[in-house]
Image 1: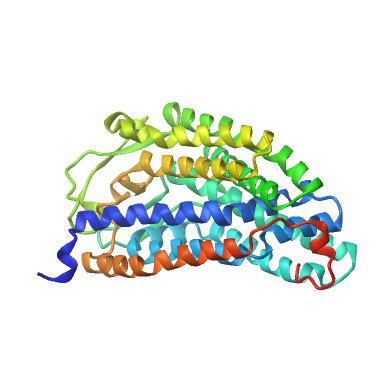
Image 2 (image 1 turned 45 degrees about the vertical axis):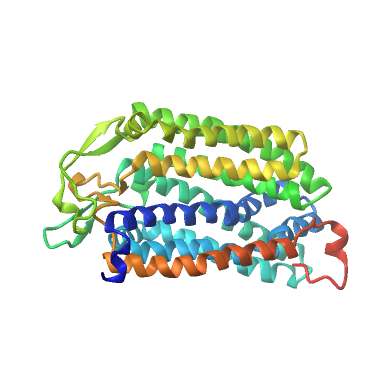
Amino acid sequence: MILHQLIDYETLRLIWWLLLGVLLIAFATTGGFDLGVGTLLPFVARTDTERRVAINTIGATWEGNQVWLILGGGAIFAAWPPLYAVSFSGFYLAMFAILFALILRPVGFKYRSKRESASWRSGWDWALFVGGFVPSLIFGVAVGNVLQGVPFRFADDMRIFYEGSFFALLNPYALLCGLLSLAMLTMHGAAWLVLKSSGPVAVRARTYGSIAALAVIVLFALGGLFLWIGVGGYRITSDISPIGPSNPLLKTVALEKGAWLTNYTTHSWMIIAPVLGFVGAALAFIAMRARREVMTLLFSKVAIFGIISTVGLSMFPFILPSSLDPRSSLTVWDASSSHMTLFIMLVVTVIFLPIIFAYTAWVYKVLWGKVDEKSITDKNSHAY
């Protein structure tokens, strides 16, 4: 037996769909509070020292948190080549906006305190705000467009044609999803600030985080409602083999109202995901008001897990539907790399992913503790 045949093709495809979800959730629950802190910076901190407190709550770990975003992009490139080709070319301008915003963050961290000028520091503070706000919004906008279908198609020779535009991405439902993403990561950033800071910064973070948690509940409910009554979903109408070739044109797909909710009637256990989204946000609000710092962050993570899982489970087995030619929609069963490629990647992942988890946990343990004004003003401090 050839080694890679120890795990059948169908199982490997399913494993890599799950691993992609794990990487996205890992980024949202770690890098997500970095983005949330940046978004909250102009609101929770009013003096230079307070802004430095907020910045330094993420200053020691933000770089490591980007690993999950890089791993997610790498996983899409290697495990789902058609998904990478369509999304990274079709969403090119949106990706560029995210990349530009993310580049502002390290520059802002490094250069903000290099000069005493108030205008200099204020400028970099707004750059850090942009670096948090823009990705938080656009990530959600992208998800909203994926749920509606992306205007691409495959020719018979498998060439990809994308016929959308950047401004077409900014449609009402996508903007609703963008606001949900923004509220979710703002809530998470506030939960982190409540845990890692003290004084006025923590007090204001608790206030804004409570508002964001309530907004998450309302926007998540609205998103689900419109998905049910206003946004068409996709359904495979022909036979499709879970071990077949990676050619999306071998199936037929229909656009149907409410199709994204079909999985919940077929597999009732999936309802756990949206329930966790609502319950996590509600408990994060309660814990925030009760000043339960660790529980606030934990429940915020639960909400993020539930919301992202809801999207994945609603769409399964689709990973990128096509509004232009539904037959070209990419699914778990017809958009992956080869059997051997997925197996080799899995072996590497099994070896290195636990190491990354362990190292990340160790870093957070070593750097645990609150950031206060005394630690910022200490002349021997290495704070930003």
